[in-house]
Amino acid sequence: MVKKKAKLKLKNNVRKPLVICSVVILIIIIILLFYFNRIGELKSLGYSEDSAKSIIFKFKYSYIMDIGENKTLNKAFESDDYIKENLDSYAKIDYQNQKHLISNINKLLDKGYSVNEINLIISRGDDKSVSDFVKRDKVKYIEEFLAVDFAKLENLDRYVLYQEKENDDAKTTVLYVNMDFDKEDYIDPLVIDDFDDYVLVNKHRQLSSKYIPDDLVKIKDEYVKTDGEIEIERNVAKAFYDMAEAAKDDGMELMVSSGYRSYKDQEEITNTYLELYGQKYVDNYVAKPGFSEHQTAMSLDVASKSVDTFVNSDEYVWMMDNAYKYGFILRYPKSKEDITGYKCEAWHYRYVGKKIAKYIKEHNITYDEYYVMFLDD
Ligand SMILES: [Zn+2]
Image (cartoon, rainbow, N blue to C red):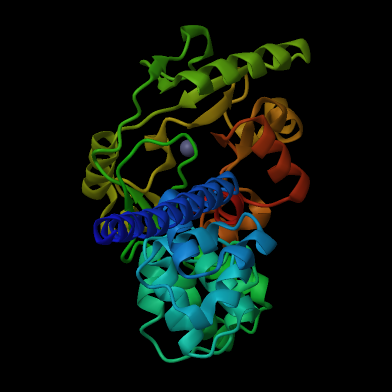
């Protein structure tokens, strides 16, 4: 009898932990299923694995499910810089692909910038300029200038100074400062190395000696006005032939008197003129090496076969009316001397493609302005 009781006690002692164990395992399985299900849901909304885990461990699953897809929140939950109190602000800030996005947002919020201002600041700058900007005391005038969609954060102080001096509206101020109108010609220019069909060259933007177009072709002899060969970028040659054909149908005979000129060519030209006419002449009339648009191989000097002074020719009038249809723009027009910084050159055309040429013609602007508004980043 004593033996039997002991056996029963032993059985109970084994059964109880077993039941508890099973229940615990079952609960763990349910929790895991729940967890992986939620991770899956968050991932289907575009959150990364790391971000999804962090959302669940921070108990923000329902918050995120209410908001849905949001790249800034994804980045915030991935980041070690996440601050709980800033969550609602992260949700309202447009994502930018910047390494220090979240830590910079935290610092801007700390300084008292509104969500609206932060959106402008981070969208008008890159990671470096925003990271520099957050070190500064709070700056006024944020919205006035940065609301212009081609404004640049790193130029903000220059906008303020330029406007104090010139009293232009915000958009004009941003446009002119981005074109470096607040700097002296040829002083501290931006130096460009890599070939690009859309490159802008002017008195503030210099091509380096390494800037060499890679697809040069010779212009067909029948279109060459001067002695010797003229080279130009392949697409520009093609567009010129199309244009010359159309001009021929209207009784015009278009030719080319200059195309690609290398950095070295321009150096030689400068030296020749220097010997002949002296420094003052060179400063006024000769493009210094790197500052000539001819080095891009995207521009050419157009000529008339029969009339030597181009402005006196019918071809000149025809080009003014029709060049844009073939992707060419008059680069230095008479009415825009203040903006281009060049005296009118009736013969100098730049190839920019049909779409841009049409826009420039219809809006009566220069390539400098077009570039700053739409192509500069
Ligand atoms: Zn020219």
